[in-house]
Structure formats: structure tokens, C-alpha cells
Amino acid sequence: MKRRLWMNCFSSGSETDISSREEGNEQNFRVFTYNELKSATSGFHPTNKIGEGGFGTVYKGQLRDGSFVAVKVLSIELESMRGEREFIAEIATLCNIKHKNLVTFRGCCVEGAKRYIVYDYMENNSLAHTLLGAKQNRMRFSWEARRDISIGVARALAYLLEEVEPHIIHRDIKASNILLDRNFTPKVSDFGLAKLLIDSSSHVSTRVAGTLGYLAPEYAVSGHLTRKSDVYSFGVLLLEIVSGRPVVDFDLDYREQYLVQKAWDAYEANALVKLVDPTLDKNFPETEAVRFLKVGLLCVQETAKLRPGMPAVVEMLVNDSVKDSKIYPPGLVADFTNIRLRPTHSSAGSSSSFGMSTVSSVNLGR
Image (cartoon, rainbow, N blue to C red; front, side, top):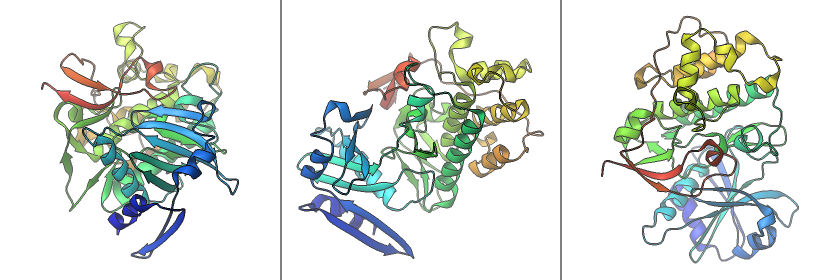
């Protein structure tokens, strides 16, 4: 069924509504024509550009019915067809999932070599843009907003990693892939790198892909991908949300450069509260903020099996259940000298401001 759904995109001669039912789940998406998307985005005009990442550029558009959408123009590498694989992966994934904290898939378009994915438009851009981006774009997030965003993302990952069958590993959880709607409800987006765990397998072996700083160390070194890889990435994101600090800042002294290391040092010094974003001006519940930072550290522990599952993470964030959890040192991919990078465009407001590279693939020692 999944294959039949996305294959409809490859025969888009006209605008179509597609509905299908599989095991009681109704799935709807729309096949758009290129001319319709071109009109909606004013010819993909630069003033409508709202983001750029490793797999393409995103534009704001308005359809004929007045609704606003985000149109991702996928970058296709014809010599390798890598972009085609990412397009198919994202369509196939989005067709079968639905959660309040996942971006809503509206449809797709294929015309010649052009590939487009259409989503609901998110009025408040991405978490990277509004919380962690350039000063002129940043908004002052209250503690309550940070708490709700953190819990929302955790619930989305618990759904993907534990509830959906087969389980879905996102592989690129980061601030620029967390979109915010008009009510600042977080929506996990960009499933171009997603992998499925089929037939009760506990892991898949794959080329390393994602964003430096968020990569679990065991995955970065071996390509051994498990659900705990996404848990690690979420832990880094959680530390970001609470601290308001970049994942990596090479302008600082060595032990200050990496947020994960800085958080561990603060934990050992019993000074985690000092890591909380100073823009909050002490308007936050200290015990809760410290608990969130401890949960982040639990998620980034070097030994993958010690990291909690995402349902346990949700429980710890919602309830005070982290008191008796021993925290071991974190894993950190800090030495990239033996990693050959294949760079792509950095996401607006995210990795470029971190002094890191967003990568489509990382080849280790080859």
C-alpha cells in the first residue's frame, strides 16, 4: 500500500486527491502540479524562501483555496539518485504516520527531474530560527514554552520509535528540524533520512548521515544505527532548549566548545542550574530545569544501552522520576580528523551559527 501511495506522485498529470485505507487507517494526500506550486510560491521567489537544508530549499506558498503551505524543493543528484531515494523515503514515511507533534504532509509533485514535498506551513519557522538563530530572529521563550516544546518532541519520538510498526528512526533530530506552528506546538519534520526497523530487528547498518554535534558516537564510528541513536540526538536538543546555547562553539576554549561536555562538567560540579539560559532572567522553576538537564545527560551517555527509551524520557520530563537514575559520562564525537565529510547546504539559523557542518554522509576512514 505504501508503495502504491507514493507511486501516485510519479503520474501527476493533474491535481488529484488520493484517499486509501489500510488496516483501518485513512491516509490522504494530494498530488500537485508543478504549475500550481509555482503559482503558490510566486515562481519560487527568493522572498518566499523560508529555509534551506541538505536536501533542498523550502518556500512559503499560498494555494488557490487560501491555505498556506511549505513547499520543499528537493535537490536531486542525478548521478547517484541519492536525492530520489530521500524523496521516496520521506513520502513513504509520511504517508503512514500521524501525530500532533509531527509535521502534516499535504502532498507531493513530480515533473521531469523536479521533486517537491508539500507540508502545512509553520508560522513560527523552526526552533533553530526562533530560539537559537541570529539575534535579529530570536524570540524570548518562556520556561513554559521550552518545557512544552521539549515534551512535545519527546512524545513524537516515542511514537516513532516505539508505537509505529515498523519502528522509524529519524536519524536527523536537531533544532532546525523542529518546526513551530502558530501556537508554538512543536512538529518534527524532515524524514528524508528516516530508516525503518523491520521484522523486529534491533538495528540497521547504514552509512552515517545526519548533523555533526547530534550524532551518537557509536553510530558515527560504525554506522550501527539503533533507536538509542535518536535518543542521543534528542538529549543534545534538550540541552540546547534549556540552555539556549549552540551545540558547538569553536570560539570558546576547548572544554567550553561542546555543549554536551559543558553540561557534564556542570553536573559534576553540582552547578547545572548555571547552564539554564540566562535570558530567562531566573524566571523558571529551578528544580524542573535541572531535572530536564539531567534527562538530557541521561540521553547522551556514551554507552547506548544505558540511555533510556523515549517513553521513559517522556515520563521523566512530565513527572519527577529522575532522582534515582545514575548518570554516566557522555559520549562525544569531538575529533573529526579521520572523518571525510561530504558537505551540503547548512540549514538556516542552525548549523551555520554553530560553527558545524551539516552533512549528508560521513565516510569513516575510507
